[in-house]
Length: 350
Ligand code: ATP
Ligand code: MG
Ligand code: MG
Ligand code: MG
Image (tube, rainbow, N blue to C red; front, side, top):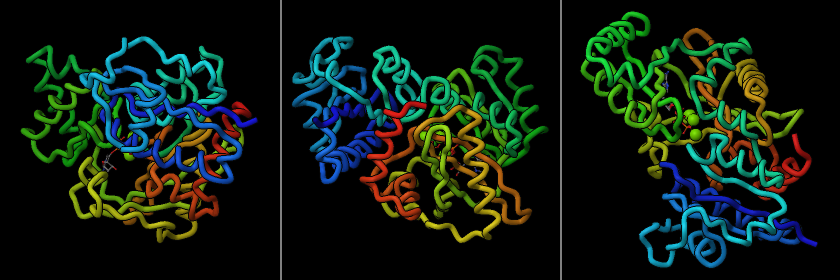
């Protein structure tokens, strides 16, 4: 008999549309040969406002690629009423990017349901989403990273005397340019590159509107290289890829406007640098207790030869042209075989 796979997509996050695009690619890989003979697909769509949909509406979003709104009369069911079809799911494939899906919340729910699922568990998902927790784990593992400061929303908003001191501290310890980020987000949402005091103040205010926890990092001049990880206890690293673009940094627009960024796979790097990136990527995966898959983003500072770890993403973009599946494609693993292996890794457990 075929195995019933629950494809969980959409989600309450700024990366909702990206999730739909990823889910479309994975759904097509699960339903065409040879996977079509192995798996039976149940699409489960989480609307932006949190309502779960299975059946016709989930199928419709998957087919059209267009998000459904809670205000859509067809979608009006109670928020916490889960579709009964989810009881039949034998393995879950969560394809949710960002908060409320990549961060351990959904993973906790699936763990409670006692059904295996693709990817990292609660801890690794939460650590991978929170840039401050992530950096502490990386530091503990001895991984080199950029200089940074942790900032709380309270320092930005609550106390008018503390704020100028905070800005002074950032200027003296990190200098310009620096990057201001909400701790828990993705797709560069809420991130600013700042070069002046005025920009710093505005960026802190903007980032604080997304998260209670913020991070400010020293800006580095570097090439951006990424590596894909696949596996549970014995994770493998893919070839290394590079992202190139013309804009000031790899911001949301550059990420999602067609033609703004190029993926170079494999990256043109000295062999020892590529190996360093692969080794660091596996260390990073283990440092957060990752499972299944992850994409590790690094900075390669050509001038000094240094490789710094930037971050790990436990549910990276998964369209056919996304970096994660492309890296495996160039490592000899086809998209449909990759999807199959991920489901098998979920069943094997971590
Ligand atoms: P993702 O979509 O990969 O999850 P994210 O929202 O988690 O992204 P980061 O990867 O931390 O964000 O940063 C986004 C981009 O900002 C980087 O790809 C890079 O272009 C730039 N950037 C971030 N931090 C730095 C830094 N310290 N120095 C130089 N560039 C940086
Ligand atoms: Mg990220
Ligand atoms: Mg991300
Ligand atoms: Mg990134």
